[in-house]
Image (cartoon, rainbow, N blue to C red; front, side):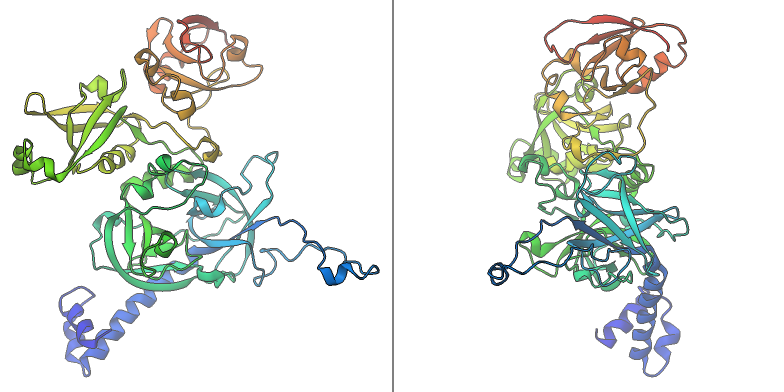
Length: 517
């Protein structure tokens, strides 16, 4: 880096007080040393909170080479279990990456694709041929289990048997600007398998990037487009993010976590020097906090089918919008599903969504991202242009719940809600596989969906099953999990439930009485 450039950064106030340093001879060297010290201090403050992660998949035994097959007296020596990632820092796992300490009680944040298929907390009966290991900066090694995982954000939290860890301080990526310095700490090419994270640095290149990633072959191409990395949330950096830095820390010069490194651009065909990180802002803090609690992450949902409105349309009949809002994009509503948040708010087909809260909406991705990052039950105002009347409207909307697609990939150690009389319930849109049965019927879009019924419970005795949709409690209409809980939590005797059976989508309502245990 040019010494005059460094001095200019100091003189401009970008890095610490400049005047005393620039007065010294040689001024450029003093400036360089000041920047160097800032990097060194940031790395020193953060590196103890960055770990290396190894995933070991069981490999089938290889047949003897042909030269040995000809020797009838040859026998392989007994197969011993090779040293594990816990015992030997020189051990080479099948796959590797990095993680970030977020809880002193052994909680490690990382990318889900790095650990998917590993053992899960509280599920010893679930077979797995994979093992996960975590090595700390002080060289201690631990077996790890998945505590919670969220396919949509590609984030997971691991649990290890440690109680004295140093969590990394969370920063605020919403204040980032292009050109700011960033430091990446990770495990490139497995070089940090001894626990000592490797560092690289660069600048923030962009703040709203979309990365096409093959994160999960379980999902269709269309469904992968709904994951957060594909909705334009990623930080782009020119920091070197080589193979093995997935799940690592992107920090600022104060040593605060501003991003979780998530992809290497060359994997998806871009310039090798470009990499991406999921930002740590208010939205992702909500996701991280849910995973830290061991719970499923919930995302917002309107109940619409949108499409892009392209810039060329704002040069014709929509020129008034362009003149007023200085924007040349929006999301057009093609379809509104009955009795879901958008429909209840009064939004109609062919409306154009211009704003979600204060956030401008220039595309379908913008709309899906801003709604999705809100928690179900959140109230937000949508600024909508109604083409049929040439007027704008502000619609208050209470957000519903996005239908989880990769249900097998959702991992939680703690339930979102306590079961009621053996019944586990959620929003009617909570699961894609069940929502397919009801998305064309407005009466089936309101109530609470039964996800599980415990064997031998009062709900099982009432013959309720997964997929049934409860619409009334003691003849009182309910629309959400909160309304259901409000209706049942004070009842100590038998409770009458009206429901639509999930096994017979065309059947009418039925009524059962659920008795206390």
